[in-house]
Length: 140
Ligand code: GTP
Ligand code: MG
Image (cartoon, rainbow, N blue to C red; front, side, top):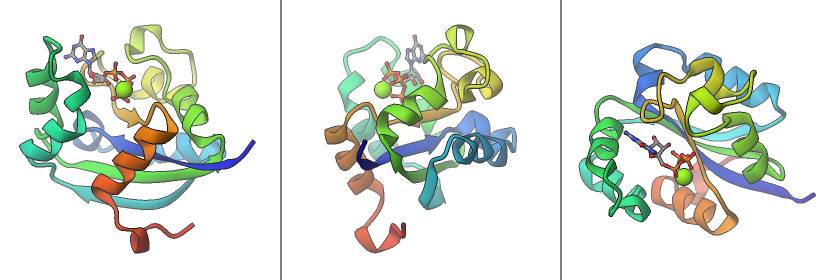
């Protein structure tokens, strides 16, 4: 399988509970490398752009408000089949349905406050990485 890069966000519920290291340990324990990382306060415009695919969903306003409620960690992860691998490591969107050992099972609070984001395809990974990182900030 090819080496890929995917985009990750450690969400406000995790930064607020001071468990970003726990999340990173699960990422690294799964064989993914953190090749870029920074802590930012997302603006409303950034969050609306980032989640624009969900703009017609009833929870969109709640999702945007949550994403700007506290700092987040944006990351680029690299590894074999990193996009699908990270989705496995994250676990199901709703932590109640997530498998044991996944980030969402071990860390998330609810379907909204679910600790992490990961890209769902190669095209979205490229777009999401470019929204938050310039090329020289990613060092593999
Ligand atoms: P992301 O990696 O964050 O994109 O999660 P996902 O791909 O597992 O789920 P999806 O793209 O379907 O939804 C995006 C995000 O919207 C989820 O991670 C949740 O944070 C949020 N979300 C989804 N469903 C609900 C819901 O019913 N209520 C609320 N409040 N938030 C939701
Ligand atoms: Mg998604």
